[in-house]
Amino acid sequence: MTHFGFGQDELEELARGLAGRGVDRMVPVGSALSFHRVWDGVDLPAEFTRLVTVIR
Image (cartoon, rainbow, N blue to C red):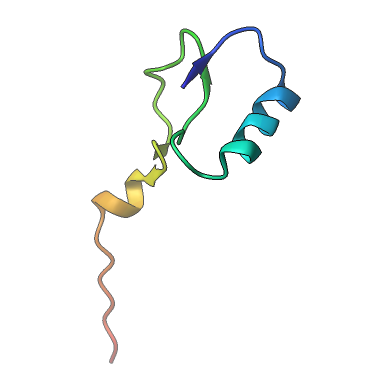
């Protein structure tokens, strides 16, 4: 969700009100395509890498 003109407190209140439904990401207008390791609620490095464990 992109936003404009809302304060931090208002956005946090909205996030609490949504209770994890519908919106995964809130960014200011103009930053919608900014990359972050967590994209739409998915931790991309964790999803795109594989952990290999070797036990001797």
